Length: 257
Ligand code: F6R
Image 1 (cartoon, rainbow, N blue to C red):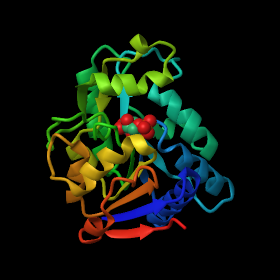
Image 2 (spheres, helix red, strand yellow):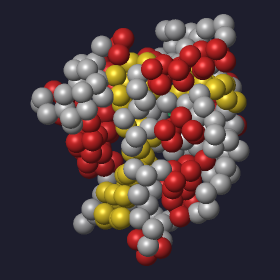
Image 3 (cartoon, rainbow, N blue to C red):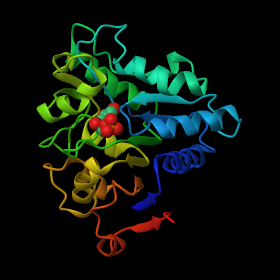
C-alpha cells in the first residue's frame, strides 16, 4: 500500500489524476471504475485539464460506476448516471455510451445488479478503481457488515449514509433507501485501486481502515489485502493516523510542506 498525504484537495486532485493517467498508459482499452460524491471532484477536474491538454488520452476508455441509487427518475440530477456525465464524462470528452452505470430505475433491480457484474467481467474487468470512503468506512455502498465475498447487488443504505448524502437533495426524505453497488469482491478484483479521502470527518474511518483490524465492521479495511492500493489523503483526513505505525506497514509519501 502506498499512502500520499497532500496539503489540500487541489494538490491531491492533481497527483491522483497523474497517477491514473500513468497507470492507464499502455492499456489499449482501459476500464476505469469511477466513484461519485465530493471526494473525486478535484480528481475529475484535474483529469479533465489533462484530457483537454492532450496528455490523458480518453479514446477507447470505458468507465464503470461504483454504484447507483434505486428508484430515482431518469432525469433526477442526483441519479449517478447524470452526476457522472456532469462531473466526469462531459468535461473529459467521453461519450455517455462509454459510461456504464447500474440500472437503478428499472423494474428488477436484482437482475440489473447481476447484469452489471457480468458487464464488468465482459469488459475484461476494471483496470483501476477510484474510491471514496464513507464516514462509517463504506466503499461503494458496502455498508458495515457487508460480506467480503459480495458481488454487485441491491443494498440498503444505512441511516448515517442517508444523512451524509442528504446535502445533495432538496429534502432529506428524498434520499433513496437502496442502491445497486459493486460488492467488496467486485472492488477487490480491480487490478489497481486509488482511494481518496478529504476532510476531518473522514479521519477516524481512514485510521481504522488503514491501521485497524481487517473486519467487515470496517468495509474499507479489506483494501489492506489488495496488492495494488494507493491512498490519497489531505492533511485533515490523515490527522488521526499514527505515521510511525503506518510507516511499518505501508510506503508513506508526506508531500505536505
Ligand atoms: C460513491 C460511493 C461512496 C462515496 C462515499 C464518500 O459512488 O460509492 O462510497 O465514495 O460515500 O462520499 P463523499 O466523497 O461525498 O464524502
